[in-house]
Image (cartoon, rainbow, N blue to C red; front, side, top):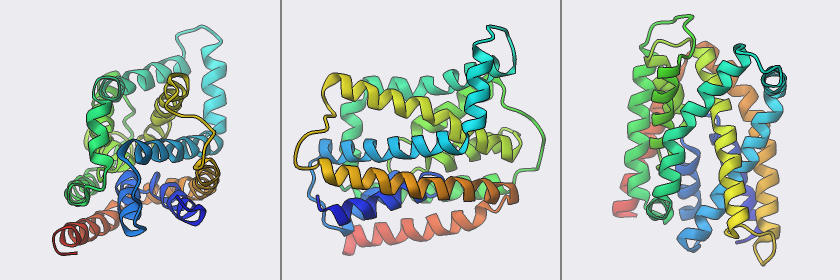
Length: 264
């Protein structure tokens, strides 16, 4: 993989991880446009590395929240931070189960299946449109809703289903406040990605030697910097509840992807 290609894909990942337009779907489209001939496992590996970069950018943006949660946990009381952490853990269960038992099966979808990406982007568009129709509330995340949101996150492992779009839309459709939905959506993925990367490093699936190391490093830095900007920007956008614009974008890109896959 060329360094320039890696940087381009890193910027795509950083921008689309937080915008509800599917980072994994755009990565697959980007790799197809750039002519990447990576094997499925190499393609998935690069995707994981870029997701780790945006996880770090999330920690930086929400550093105060993360620090408050850590301090609250070490008080060893049934406080707000402990309850929030438990909800995060509950939300991780569906995706963790799929990642553990169906990882090999999921790799098939990261092999340039552009028509699948197009279909999933259209599904994302529908979710975002429905969420925009929901009424504004001040309801918080419950334990039950945390699990349901986690199921949406598990489905969003498919390229083309926006993780932030699916989780925020699901939370909003459950009646949860939009700002609280965005905060929970962004924080819930951090331990999942870090756990995934740690698992791959310990198993030897990820190593930092070889011809692709420099390119992956460049992509990592690009995704981290772009992620910082996109996360901050997205928090402002969610407060305005203008998800329909993203729905239209996903619909157009999805239709173009399907047409390109069939006739391109």
